[in-house]
Figure 1 (cartoon, one colour):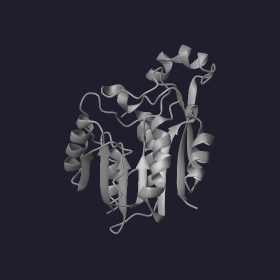
Figure 2 (tube, one colour):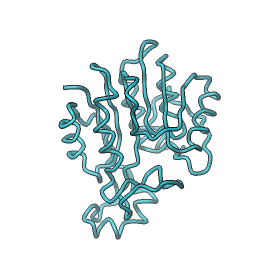
Figure 3 (cartoon, rainbow, N blue to C red):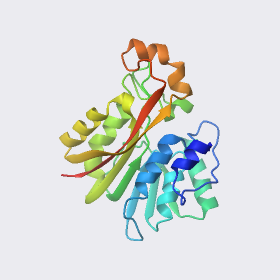
Length: 229
């Protein structure tokens, strides 16, 4: 992790994390979401679900509060990575390989956290494999974000909380509106301006043609917190 990311992470966040090639490593968005997660009340009686766990950094952070944590990811490499990191951190976490927006209706949770793919892409559909699966999310960056908004009411307990981070480039107001239509009250509880990363920089011309990006050299990241109305 670079210094900027480390500064955003709370002191209790796991510092030693391994990652297989192609697994999304903690970045600024991870740090913002970790900070928001630490503001939630969690303990031995809490059930936490992480959708799209990557290295397992946030799942480990939640487990350190004593919560029972389930982490899912569609990537086999991410699942292996998260399991290894949980073992290194000596935290008990249930890690499953599963589509992060697939819900079987059997369990609900007190806290659901997600750092989903949210980068606008020239491809209408998210990739089925490769590293880009961790960030590409359709033309407007909302393919996975919208699915999470739709299933969140089913996954959350009556007093549960959703915490999700994404870029302002995929329309924060659209997320809040979608959550409201699903029966959740959402608000932005944290935000940060960060330099455009490698992927956005490489797509600058396409993003400009789509009217998604102007001449700015930074993007805004937002953490959205939602609960039942």
